[in-house]
Amino acid sequence: MAMSAKSSELTRARVRSAWLFLSPMLVVLALVAGWPLVRTIYFSFTDATLSNLSDYDFIGFANFIEYYEGEWYGVIVDPDWWRAVYNTIWFTVVSVGLELILGMIVALTLNAAFPGRGMLRAAILIPWAIPTIVSAQMWGWMLHDQFGVLNAILMGIGIISQPVAWTASPDTALWAVVMVDVWKTTPFMALLILAALQMLPSDCYEAARVDGINPIKVFFKVTLPLIRPALMVAIIFRALDALRIFDLIYVLTSNSRDTASMSVYARQQLVDFQQVGYGSAASTLLFLIIALLIIVTLMVGRVRLGEDPR
Image 1 (cartoon, rainbow, N blue to C red):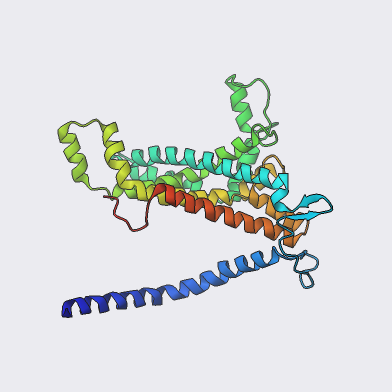
Image 2 (cartoon, rainbow, N blue to C red):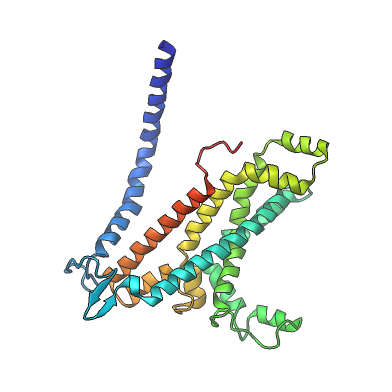
């Protein structure tokens, strides 16, 4: 009983210490993230504009949905909003899926022992280290339909017969954004997966090698189950970034309705149209959609942070 009481007291002391060390970070997080979120949700129920932020009225859910003189108005019934939702989710699924596959291949390659591995690990991070705006501007020039290097290469080897407006055509614009995003953020995914691979116990692989088990079977039966929690964390981190995508789409395709993401749509309402209340409603819906999708991802993945994958 005495040992149990001491252990319980030690656990409580550790919990108190943990909260003590975390409290400064929580305070800063509440100020820089919590307060703007609360203000955004509050403004979504008002008719505030950029030119009139000090004098506005509370209008309830009118920015979200309202029936007026026989017609429905609001973000929820705006076709442009649902197009932006579709674009964002499509972009997230495709880009994160490709980054997961390519990141796994890169991580498995970098996990093997070969000369120059350390230099290659550093070089592979260069695309991720380049600021997103710089990457978008650089790829915007490369994808230009008149003097872009990509068109010159493809025409030189005979794949296309005339220049393609990669970022201007609705058929290719989103694919161009996906390509740039995959190029930039695959190293991040590979880095997280590589860190998980580095922590795997070697005895499992030695036993499999002695038993003559096929390496592909070892990968699916041993490696994947062991790194599944790390994969889920990587997917969630990348999905959060992809769902909030703004800079790549805005720089490469500007304000095109065919390629606008939810963030681009909200920015357009807030800045271009100066409708702070309406734009805040779109931002609030963006926050709710991201929260819902992340919760669903956690439930489907059936992973709990801190759980031993073995």
